[in-house]
Amino acid sequence: MRVFVAGGSGVLGRRLVPQLVARGHRVTATTTSTVKLGFVEQLGADGVVMDGLDPMSVGEAVAAARPDVIVHQMTGISMAHAGKPDLKHFDRWSLPTIRLHTEGTDHLLAAAEATGVPHFVAQGYANWNEIREGGWVKTEEDPLDLHEKTPSHPAMAALRHVEDAVTSADGAVMR
Image 1 (tube, rainbow, N blue to C red):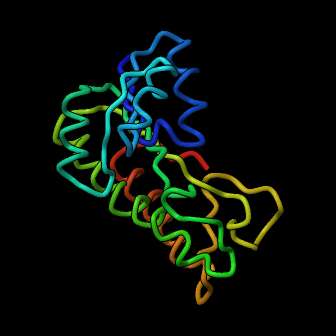
Image 2: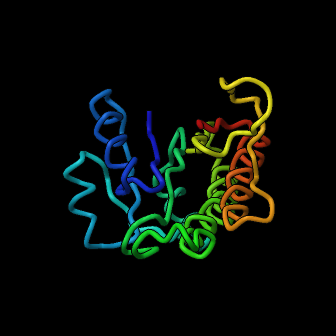
């Protein structure tokens, strides 16, 4: 299977890519920097520089890879993209990830549709953002707590966007 890992050089992508390669998949992994192309190739993937916020960049990368599945692992939570973690100003610090979870998700889905990619999987998140109703154990069907009127709200709304957009396109989101 040809797998396109958007965010392949990130914290989760760099762990996922070698596992996919070890299982015999042909992997194209994206990075935002030409400096990281060698690293991605060491993981066993074909590397491609892509800007997840640029629809042309995303469309060209997906079209060239001709994947059977897109795995969305893009975030901006790194020193290079967001700087030092700032949980007091979470809404500002997480802005690169918020944009990748909204605009980037839409660009990847548009590229998947334009090129006929049949499968789409996205990274979600559910740690402290589960709704505080019912029992302690939650399922994928339980709603997220969007933390209205808090600095976390934009990031939670972006995660909701990922879930809604990807599942509407018959893809899967893993919390």
